Length: 216
Image (cartoon, rainbow, N blue to C red; front, side):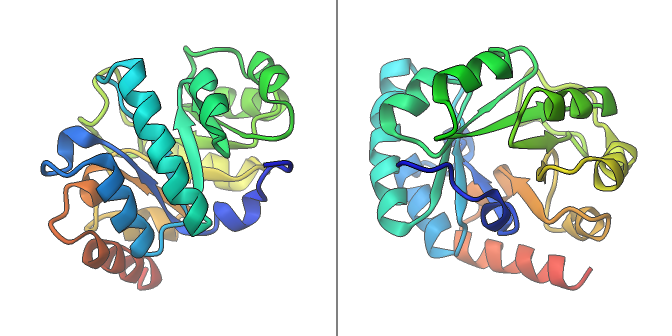
C-alpha cells in the first residue's frame, strides 16, 4: 500500500462492519468477514478485546489476505503496531489510546486514522489533530463494549452533521429497527456489531439494514 485509501468512497459505503467473535454464533472471525464481504460490506474493522496479541496477529494476517483479495478496507482497532505489521488500511483509536498526532507520526499518510468521539469538544479536537474520520456514539445503549460511556443520543450526531467537515461513522446500539432514525439524521456510514455478526444469515441481515436505510 502506497497511498492512504480514499475516505469518501469507503465511508459512503453505508455499512461499516466490525468483528466480535463473542457474538458470532461460534463462527470464526475469518468466516464472518467472508460473509460480510459477500454481503457487499466494503470496510471492516477488526476489534477483539479478549484475545492474546498473538491470536489477534494471526487472525489479522488471515483477514488482511481475505480483504485485500476482495478489495475491501481493513481497519485495526487500538493496536497501531498490529495494523502496521499486517499492512492494514487504517487504525481506529479511542480517547484513552495513543495520541493521534503520535500515531500519525508512526503511520504517516499511508494509513487512515479513525478516532472515537463522544462530544462536540472531542470532535473538534479530532479535526484539529488530523484524524481522518471519527466515530460518533454510542447513539443508543450498547453492551458490546464493557467500558463504554453513556449514550450520546441524537444531539451529538446532529452537531457532527452540522459542524464537522471530516467523515464520520455512527455507532452504538444500532439495530435494524432503529437504523432508519440514524440515517435520516444524516449519517451516511453506520457501524453495527452484534446485529450483523450475530445474525444467522449475515447477507440477509445486511440486505435488510440497507433497505431500512433507503426507506428512511
